[in-house]
Image (cartoon, rainbow, N blue to C red; front, side, top):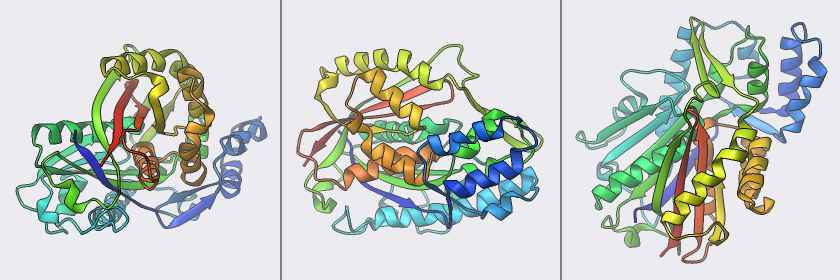
Length: 363
């Protein structure tokens, strides 16, 4: 069972509280919506207090071409992604000693908020002393499910190569997809919710010597994973790609879809592992929004307190797409969790799809 050894995060430089974001949206959208004050309640009802962006609010009041926004994405992603990798491999909270860059066998790079060829991981590799034979697996288009999917793909890699050390690097600069002249309700809701986040996780195989480097008494091992896609649901979540950039597609039915669709997937997945939902003590959920977290509770019939850490991340950082679940995972890893405790990680994304991981804390 491959183990998650370290997780890091990098906070973008510009903090915006929700009152500032509300005032910004009021100024921008008031002429387009007659019921603007009612719609702006989403900014407060979402229970987000602050978020972080790579640019200041003043920058978003100006017009920017797709090219300009994408160049900003590349520049910021390389700088912040590089920092996340360094922090992950040198994390004194989780590691007894730093992991040399040369020992990393593969990088799974996750993002859906910008375009780059060569991909961002290749650009970062040119700035850090990685082995030139490192394997690169850039994954684009999984949206909010991407972080969990990256962990799943790293699990499969380390299962096949038990001596491997693998990085999952998630960089989502959602703010740079903002469309100043898009007066749709989806854009307004997205403006109330999405933020920028960067995170990196280190996953190692059974024969990679975790006992010599792990500082924690117990760490999460990945027991099994499951990917599921819902037929005929392409319009639930994603991007509408136009000349001026990425326009958000965000169905209001997502919480209702979760309530009816998620539980059968989870129950069948757990039953294959001979685990019952009542045995799950730690719920590592991607907090897509307040209503999404409420839908998890209603669908899976779990105590609301199991979402406390996900709520904390949502409150302080907003929805950072694929990076968000890694922020949640990091906070679970900071706890002293008893050996053999079960955990369930889950995230939902475009497709419409889900990614589920069964975790167990081991020495």
